[in-house]
Amino acid sequence: MYTERREKLFNQLPKHSLAVFFSGHAAQKSNDQNFPFSINRNFYYLTGIEQENVTLVFAKGENETATFLFLEENDPVKVLWDGAGLTFEEAANLSEITLPRVRNIKTFDAFIWSFLSTSRRAIFGNIDTLYLDLERQNEHAQDTVAIKYAHRVKDLYPFLQIKSSQLLMAELRMVKDSYEIERVKEAIEITKKGLNRIMDNLKPTLMEYEVEAEFNYVLNKHRTTPSFGTIAAGGKNATTLHYVDNESVILDRDLVLFDLGVAYQNYCSDITRVYPSNGVFSERQRAVYEVVLEANKKTIEWLKPGVSLLEFNEYGRKILIEGAKKLGLIKEDAEIDKYYYHSLGHYLGLDVHDVGNYSLPIPEGALITVEPGLYIAEEGIGIRIEDDVVVTKDGCINLSQDIIKEIDEIEAYMKK
View 1 (cartoon, rainbow, N blue to C red):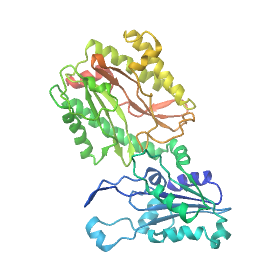
View 2 (spheres, one colour):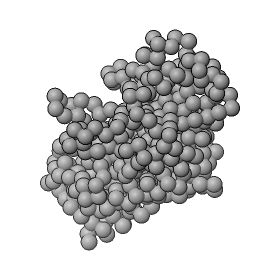
View 3 (cartoon, rainbow, N blue to C red):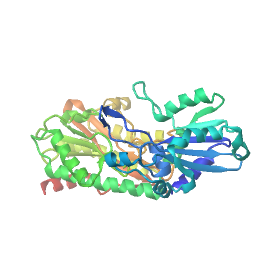
View 4 (cartoon, rainbow, N blue to C red):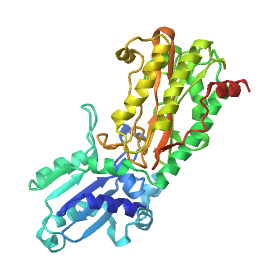
């Protein structure tokens, strides 16, 4: 599997180039503690390895390609404190890289230098381009390992052209293989169990964080973690898209919006459901909910490969516009922006908002969310219904179809 993925990347790399991917490091939290380690997703996609301070190198010459892996040798003293890391043999088996090409991380700098010296030119030619995993950063983010390495390389090898491998990787990761889809299915199944537990325990007077804790209980039992910060938003709080405080009391007759997901073996689910705090939708809540549900279901039925993301968004938006008019919320199409102010969906995979070339049509094999919503702040109603679907040859399959979303089913479950 990983060999096949690397071959696809090799096909995109030009001759006389190197590509380097770093697994990353855990950020320091305090003098004696780090934040939990989170693997670089592109590195993981290409190796299956989830360990700090490991480096993957692609070398592509005129007629030769080779892949190398560099990691730390196990230090006996460090093993006593932190446990053992992968042996070279284990790393070779997991990544599908032959053992002679799995090496000590201490030799990495000299290895790169050797490729840029005259001795290797007979095999790989004159290396003139280096691809690095240069992630997009905001002004407040710390530099990644790749960005720091790029600064070093510029000083040491000014003749090298440095390029980003981000778009190459984004296009590769747009199409999911069967292994990836199965991981997401597992994440969705755990999410379903968490949402069922939420419905089992939801009632007025609880705090939002208390209901969130019911979801976390299920995740802990399955040795998984949230794929992003859980949103548990009652009443008007649900009209704020990224409400994450989860600190308000849930009132009687509130609708409570739960936008949440699970990271299972690094693959993510992203599901949104809305439940009445007392187990019964009011007439108005039901009417608004049905409009959003119609947009969700019709878009899933319509979605197919070759559709652009613009067409995808416009299709769902039109359904919401017509529904909002029937609800008496708007008269003109443009007024929908007051009640619907986000896109209809995004790619899903190793990241919740997964990478992809968003200028290309949606391909067969893509995992994408479908999440229309309406947010009526003056009525304290916020509704979003989100499913995770895989795009197939002729349409798409809703992977989260077993997570109930019909009003009658929700009410029946909560009554039971």
